[in-house]
Image 1: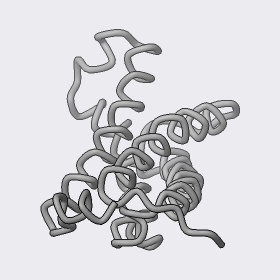
Image 2: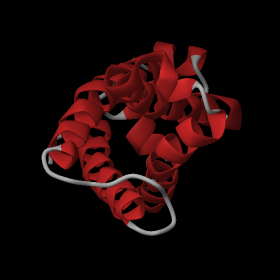
Image 3: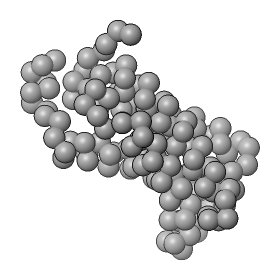
Length: 143
């Protein structure tokens, strides 16, 4: 494991790469939902599509920053990565839904949209973050 960590140092470019991967996952999930509900017409107005995606990006950035999701231990320890990715997902999706339900953004946050978004983001982001942790460190600490 130390050899792998030595090959993949945790500089700012790696952290930014993980952040970009997180945002790509979140944007991808929302974009797939937008396409499933509206087809290509969902992207006919880039501003409208951005208005749908933005609350989720804002929620993710805020919660990931508060959770310290880009710290060394989270990026290299499988248990910490899984735990904080789950917590961040629940918080980020809920903040996004509050924003969508507010007058700031067009859209709503009706049931079961919140459940679908939470489960879908969990299903994509947590495995992604476990792969990252495995590649960058791969350790599993016992609590």
